[in-house]
Length: 276
Image 1 (cartoon, rainbow, N blue to C red):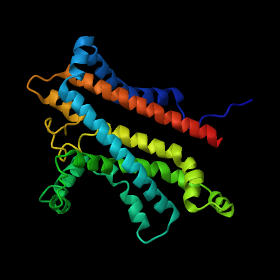
Image 2: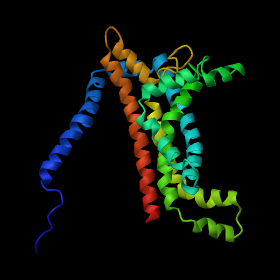
Image 3: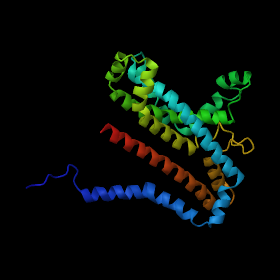
């Protein structure tokens, strides 16, 4: 019996190219982080991580990213619902603008947000009058993380909403359920895996973000607005570059990101089994 030939010829060649590119772009850079980190003893490793500025930076990055991810989950769900369930003028433009934080250079986003929310900016000036300062505070840092994280939630929810049959809502309505009950007990359980996926991706992106937060945060250790990525950059840009210290902090970020992605994959796997 004749075997079907693969559509793409040269399986060995294509596999080799794929593995080579994967190694050059991902595996080798990650291995270099491990190599530099392993040059430190356990005492030196923990001494770097437990320094006040490093602990404060991790606390700031994780807390602000967590708040931003929660806000993105709420408003991302609303945006995805509107884009899927309603027709209105400018819908395609609005849908395209969701991708803007992906396409826009993060440094440009950071400069724009910093100017907009400064005391001389349009929004910052108005908020300053009511006693709310945004630029160079954790509030501004959180706003920047909301900006770069909301597409993850919207794009994770849209395919699920598009495939969600209207018959679920119709059946619940015929059985006497009101809209709140229908959303809470019928729709939300179907959206929960995708919502958690978007939440996790936004959180992971926020913890390691640099370009969009570097300008609006102020990077003040005293005010607690330094983020982890800035501390790493400080170590690399110092007169005597501390590659080992930067790699140690980057290793912790790598572990956090890996754990988040692992949880996301487990959620997606569980959702796939449920759908099957």
